[in-house]
Length: 253
Image 1 (cartoon, helix red, strand yellow):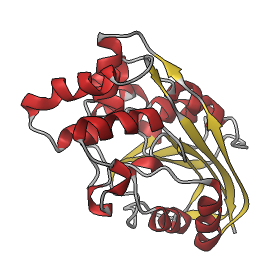
Image 2 (image 1 turned 60 degrees about the vertical axis):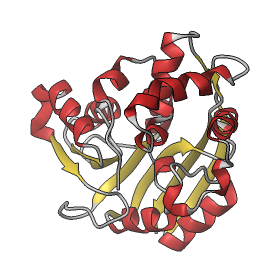
Image 3 (image 1 turned 45 degrees about the vertical axis):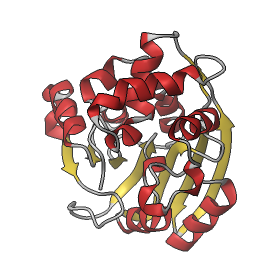
């Protein structure tokens, strides 16, 4: 089940997601009248950018968090005539009519453990020849944070059962194969190290709690949240989130 987010705190943080979004949307080739699906639209940062790229088109924003979508509606209240907001699970058929011209996604897919189902479902909603550009955490992403979490929890996070896994960082080869199986062509997949440096103390703690460790915190009593976040932060060699981004470009066959 998609998790809920602290949408207001999320929007207040210095997110590297802004640069990731610009990079990802920069790989789209649009004429201005397309319908684009923003898969995992969150609070609407990239949705707003997409609206600018398709002044005569529309954007469908899909997310599994109602709080994120509420924040999106507030931020883009003056542009709702060209936005369709959908609360849904990206691995299941979406309640949208017809097929879209393009699908984009930023910083979402690593929260979904079944990429085969994800890509197959998205392909279902993309017209033949339609563009698919995305980025998410990839193989090696937040490895230092994962190690710190393992130390704090006293167990190996990578050894958890699938039902307990909170994120999935795929590699190039497996992603390419899954995209091919789902009916994509012209596939380009790559990994890009992209560390984000934060201010030590409050900013790092807030960032970890809101952006990185939320699914771990969901499994802990609220009384243990602050201690857990600070214990993880204390085990990091520096106030850096060691991101590795998985970049995807493809077309629907």
